[in-house]
Length: 153
Image 1: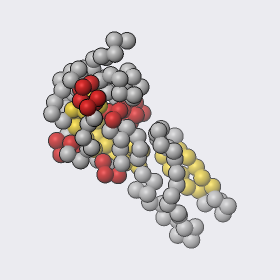
Image 2: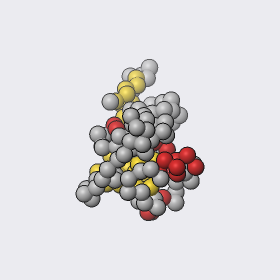
Image 3: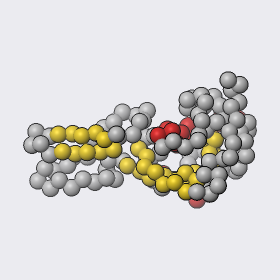
Image 4: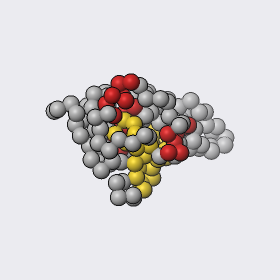
């Protein structure tokens, strides 16, 4: 989906819109005398999903989206049975070694749920708990071959 903004001088700014829990804001002024659109300022990020078979998929993501939201937006098989409220482990992903140290430490609750996930690795995290930002532009995550719904529903 694209968002189009028209200014009083009919200059059109089009930006990719991503579902997010955070409100959309445009904090970057664009000069009408020099209408150069800075995509980085619009917070369009890239991330890579790696299928269990090793296929890499580079996708666009919005600043403030979770890995789970981006996976759903692009049709990846990442269930998220609890809809992102950290009550299951079906959004388990494996973070690329080079990116893992850039993430905040998982909470104790997240670690408890990861204990119940399939094929847990030292760099495993729940996709609903990783919020994308410019610092995570280019993040690479692998999808496990299976997911279990520990909520019992």
